Length: 275
Image 1 (cartoon, rainbow, N blue to C red):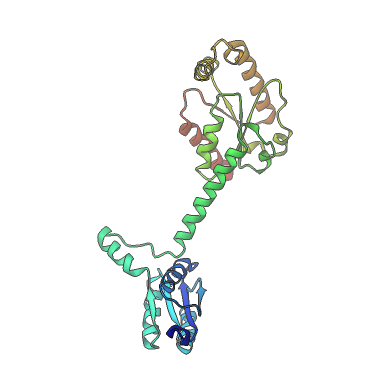
Image 2 (cartoon, helix red, strand yellow):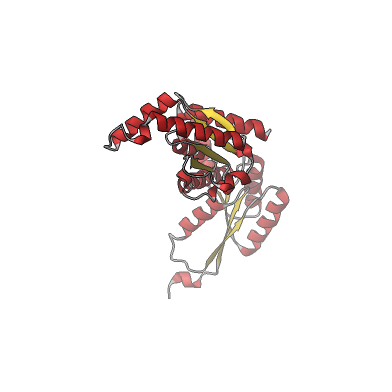
């Protein structure tokens, strides 16, 4: 018989003043180094008072359990260490051994704020979600995105709608963009949202002509195509501004503006109307 079969069940408490994911993962990684099947890891998150620690230490002492913890609030960290020692409970702090050398190396005081990793993760996933949204609802692929978007960009072709959508997505904004073409009526969904959510993008006709000619060249086409025809450009720009005026939306001239510059104008506008 394996000697480990004789062991009683091993209980490990993964304790934290945040979610407790780090202490739980460390406990799992360590326990896997042993051929032990009879164990249980219990996560105890959001521990923020000494009363909870007292109850936990008492329970761990009775069960002969092991504690793995991450406590960034120094007072709580010191308290759990002191009480564990007094009650002969094994408790391991998995954060301080890394934190202390960094304090010495950087010469900076840590924030001592629980849940920062979780906040970073949430921000990251929100950004990914916004980028996926921008791709899905790019160039009017699915007009249902208009109703779900934080911002809707409208304008003729080559007014930087797509790069702007992606840039704003990295600012955690869900952006849909809709091309305006005289032969196609604007999506009805534009009339169902607040005009403050709609940004109209315009551009100087000569500048647009140059951009479109370059675009045709990169596609291996002649720059005399109607896409870059000045009369066609006048028609499109006139139509787009009529649509924007009817929608009563914010209008931004993107002529000679970098994507970042236009994006900052949009972000400032959003800040203003959200105040």
